[in-house]
Length: 315
Image (cartoon, rainbow, N blue to C red; front, side):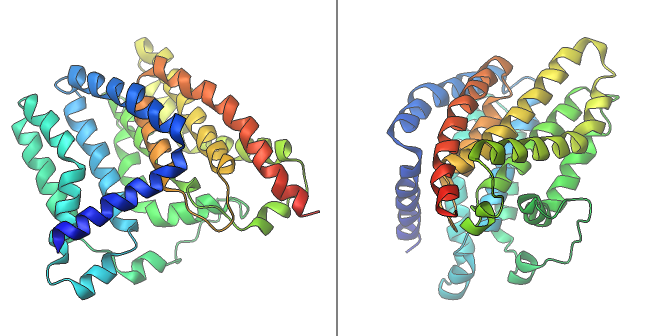
């Protein structure tokens, strides 16, 4: 039964990958994924990568676990549902475990597997997922992605933000914080709002996109400004710090444009979440991050064209 459920999960992933398109799928599998693998082989034994890489993978697993639609169903029909969760996450993270073991990072691998076991045994309640008790007055009402996203991820954001406040001592602390926080914020745009929310703007597609990007990127800059100021204390890393900040802004722009490039009313895109998470991880290599800066230009044209049909339909 467990094997059949895991096989069904892989079939679901395969079917949802159709959102990527053939060109993007080939680009990922032939170019991007081999580059990531080679980069990790070279870096995994060098600080802080033995800690950063497992932390990123565990965060992705936790996001999948906390948002999966079937765990309450499995809890009610399966005698041992946590075995299903553990088997799925172990298979999903097997490349990370192999990478740690080949680098002789045995303690890191054991800690990583222990964290997978903890995540598998943690099942968020329906009440915690539907709670809206957090009041976010500082977030404008029109930024609904941030309103719902911060409510869902507030504990993670606080945990990720705290290490960056100690960047006076280690330059990589604010860098890690910025990466993880960026990953959280770009995940806010995987869900597509109803069409009437877009039509209500009564503007052209380009104006809609520019206004949204400027507004969201501006507030994101205010959020990460303390981390940037702390990191800029280290003179020799100032250019790199500015480069990573610009990469984060581009990732946010990339995520917004990708959302409206694929926009469908009342839908959710697994491909969007996969692509943005991958983009965050690849952007750690700053020269490669320029690829996503170029990609935003193509996405801008596609997003504008896609929105035009919805905005025209509303008039």
